[in-house]
Length: 108
View (cartoon, one colour):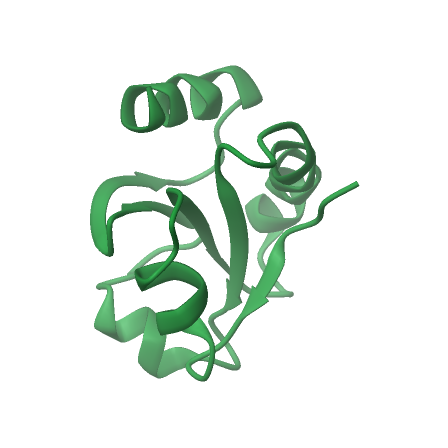
């Protein structure tokens, strides 16, 4: 069972920007209620979408510079990257169904 990658400034380029498949990145923090609510959905997607989509998480408390670089103002913010580019941005808690629809739009 796949789980979301722990992303940091050190591995973001290799794991996200140079990935050969689209990547869903969850910008979150341990104290964020909606982040805790969406976490199990993120983990399910990491497993269910394995091979089609990579899923990673950025702790904004530990990686504030990375969050700033991508204009993350509210959390959770989920950004879908394809070919090294941010192509979709989703802010706030959302259902698994809505997340899957956004992923399908990008991944096809």
